[in-house]
Image (cartoon, rainbow, N blue to C red):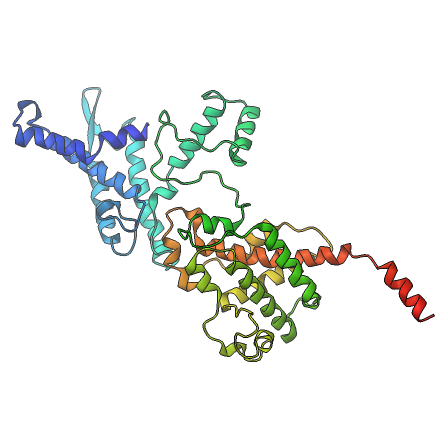
Length: 407
């Protein structure tokens, strides 16, 4: 079924036009349209519920939440009873549509609406999510993907395995963006990436979705120079081999977390995310290395990391040690995924909960990107130091100098 045609035909504007022809124009041809109008309005409401894209909308187009669940629940019951009562003419006899050969689409509406209720009880009742935008989990994205695959092969509906593999690779690496085609079964209603590998820099993603033009652009070369300078000045902090952190190790990680905050403050343009990185309460840092170097205040210029930043850095350190990063190569994206999985469904960065809803794209969620940015910066610091240590060679000049002096 071409969904784009169904949504245009079964729309409120068509129902209003039919009622206008009957009641305002009094056209005889439209005297019996009441049943058709009700059919259109029922399915239009169902389409609106299943295509909800924002919590700020009103009526049936609002995302599923606690405020409108009762309305959706009652409509689901009404729609189910309505579909069960529909009959079509088959071989001269009227039979229920759910018992006919055309039952698939009608069963699909019943299944989807009841699945929506189940999603509500699973995620919203348990306070995992505040709302669910049903459009983000619709089949439209799969239809658009298949349309893109067809376009890669000259609109061939039956590509070979090699052709599909080639098209899939092109779409994954995004050498060709997934296009919006008007010839497919559906049309995109929102700018959502279909194939997306999160290998891009999360800091750049945060900045690209932040409307703040008063920040200077920080080059990647400066970022590398600051990390190398920090390693050279504090090479003792990365030399801990204990998996279970001692008090000293914890203080070292907190100190590194302060540098991570310092680095992110100079590269992230989002003011809300910047405030979440820094701790407002300085009392827990009274006996920390940061407070000592800051002389009890801010004179040293070091940043006090928030509790969330410290937790993320400690979890990243645990994962680094478990992967034995000093003796074998590591997959940074895999480590970031492990860190995200650890903090999934937790109350970390609770101050960013409402801020994360400001972006319509789920791939620009600042909460997730901030966790990845912290983890990425911490991993880069530790790995750079590990590589620096392994690439160091004894200085022959120093060795000969000592041989001459102490001979």
